[in-house]
Length: 366
Image (cartoon, rainbow, N blue to C red; front, side, top):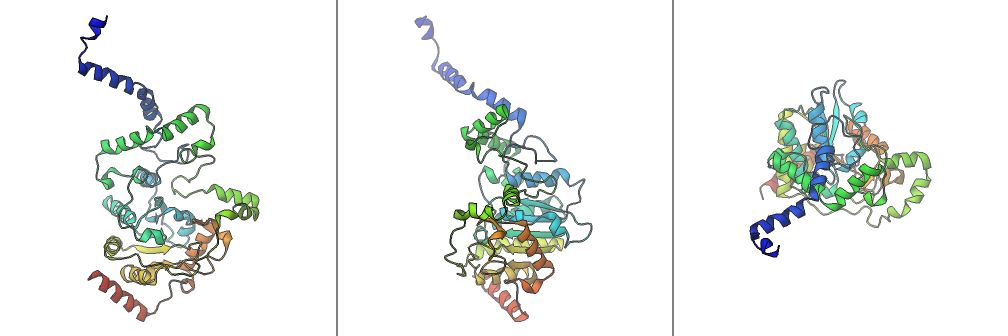
């Protein structure tokens, strides 16, 4: 028997060992293809019933593609997770009667990511009648789209093949910290604390078709009222730098991105609104950055709600320091579309406008 075993070639031994390593993965791969945990293998019209926490950018893109024939989307909310405060129905109050809005965002979105999404929408013939871009100060200095599977939403946008796109998601699922919670949930249909960040712990977190976010904390606030902020008091640290102005972050590379955004919007005659959201800690966006934004995108397009003002003063406007609520989003939309002179960051004269243009022009020449 030993003599027979010695006749097995090194190549055959290697193949047998490789097979032994692969065998345990086969049922896991079968589960992946059967249940499509990331909702990337097949087209879906709805994503609100998935137990898995999905790639938000991919959800937004597919939601648009799969429903655009039945819903005439022409108004897009782009930006980071703070877009949750701007509900499509609330925005549509200020748009034309037949306009239809949809949310297409990414967690931690960058300025470059917004440009990428606008370019992709433009490439498929999306009518960009209205665009609402919601970012914060941290997003402005990121001139490239975010990398990583959590931000991969289109093979075309990423410059990879469809096979490469699918393999990226399959590889992601094979990580134990993704695969084990999902399979456990499939078997037991019960959420456990270790599943945090992989499995949705409760009710649906998004509306179908509009892709509005449903924040579970809103339900908590409705039930508990003032107790909510007492219970989460430790999350709201002292505003030690309130009123302090941030350093400029917009330079040549960011200006190039902004000009690309402006070019696409000009092509579609887009009604653009670019919002820098109200930071809970009340630090003020750089005045130089705001000047450049207004010079490139237009005075009426740029809305800066940072700093010490009526919007940032009230803790009840916030779930936690990083995210503000739809009730504040509704106030900001009203300020933008109805009470334009009340926005703390949008008071400008014709003199200021020409100054903005000169400032942006001087930087573009550097």
